[in-house]
Image (cartoon, rainbow, N blue to C red; front, side, top):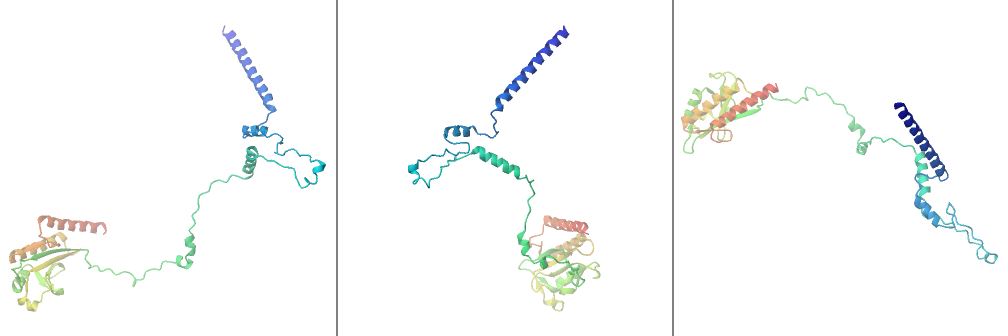
Length: 285
């Protein structure tokens, strides 16, 4: 039974293949006498059929002129009528042009800086000259990067007398020195590096030690520089205590760098500023 079914399928397949082969041969013979280009426009054929009396190139038949009209028609030439548009011919010509012109691969765009051509070559070509020791910028190691200031200000009806101020400053460890102001050194005896200084808050800003008995001022300013000798937080603590002592002694107030009343929050701000400065010093060496 299986063998018979296989045989039937083989025969049916052979018949189908034969039918397809015959249909293909018939189609080829049918289309053999009608060659057409793939770009051929059927509308051209219709227009051509409508234009009677013209050949394939669009040339009309030559008219025969009688002898009687030879003199008048001696200058007359055969009229040539061309079709307004020949899509098939134009397409064929475009294909030939495309075949003749090779395809160029796309290239990356190039930038042209025409402005550079106007620059003198001597100005563009130069060599970096080494900086000599005399040309190197001189940076003073003593120049402070940060200055912390505190003020001690008395009311308008009060003043600091020169002798009283001098006595208290000597008690707090200050020493009269450079710039005609008082300084607090590392050693309370007046030796070592300067930790912070004290100046007159009002003009002339200095103290005349010879005429200290005639001095009367309403305020003084205490300031310390960063970086400085020793521990900055300890130095600020000493300066803050000295300012509070002066304010208590003369009945004044301690002000911050903006001349506002010094508060606990302002003191913390000073401490944070000192710590941030120390951190930056460690980062930058």
